[in-house]
Image (cartoon, rainbow, N blue to C red):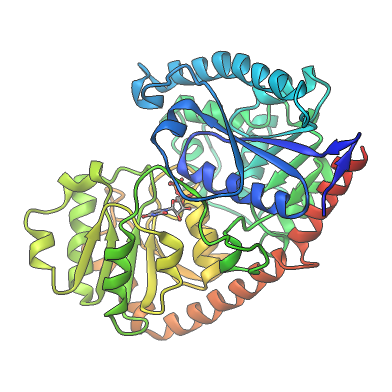
Length: 456
Ligand code: UDP
């Protein structure tokens, strides 16, 4: 089925921020749109295009420049300089790309842009195109930043209980770190609050979540903005299995150690492995790394731990050798394959939003060890509202001790609470699948988006 618009196939440009946690959900959204008959072009930066590991994919790729074609963010003098350059050079090169495509047989009708790149909406509007902003964090987190943007939540925080419409009462430490620890990362703070700077001009606000997971806050925000939930944006094979060959996201910043991981998991008993990962960005303190390492060892479970190359030096000396009977440490893994492997019984995670949605979609209970940004909020929801994991308590230094890590892992792997948590995780898995399956809440929203794209 092809979706026609003005004599050509309706065409969406989908522009992502160059980070794994943004590329994955936006790439997957491309596949959902393409499956519904829309032509899609995924736009990444030149640097990412040159360095990424690309798996075979049916999605067309184009590039723009962030001004740092040889090294991306790592090449920039500061995050601030990078963001400035991305806005300036990105605007120019996105304009050139839209011009190039407009003289082709498939001109662009709509720009779906990452909420961290609000300037893309100005470009879309300068061409008279539709603009859809894509929010890659939870709706609960979006709601918090929205209130900061509106001045309804004043910073630095002075209250001990945060009460926002659409949200259950939260404590300051449950808020995103850029808010609770105001001033810690001013550039990121500006970027996240800046997501809402021109949001009222966007034709759609797409959020990578699903209605059943965040009903109250979605209902509230949808009163103010043209907001639609379209997630979880996870390869179809792990949910509804309606998109052929959609087994992986398709673009990886790091090369996964697939064979080593899967062979190792195949040799472990069902539900016996603790999978540990802190995503693509978080940098742990050396002491935290050591506490976790000893906690894992004390739990006496098997463990598969993703330690990125840049983090490796922080592992305690000889840890890998001394625990080789029980554990495997790799630099990157195919996370979804790991989470769905029957040997995996628990996920110790930073609670990045993608990892959270993936664990939920695979029905894997979590031990939340949030580090920064939206992770503390995700951890709060995981433990207290979705009840599909435990948040590891922190000591006065803000670290999870080895005893706390061991205790949480044992609770999930062997304890009574673990049984309840596992049951809830399976409930969420079912609801996530239903949301994206035919006629589900996210599926209907995507259909509506496509219909309006074609007819507006
Ligand atoms: N991921 C992966 N292999 C790993 C660790 C992570 O493929 O070894 C993927 C994971 O499946 C997720 C993404 O990287 O889709 C991380 O996104 P998330 O939002 O959880 O964390 P971030 O990296 O943005 O902090």
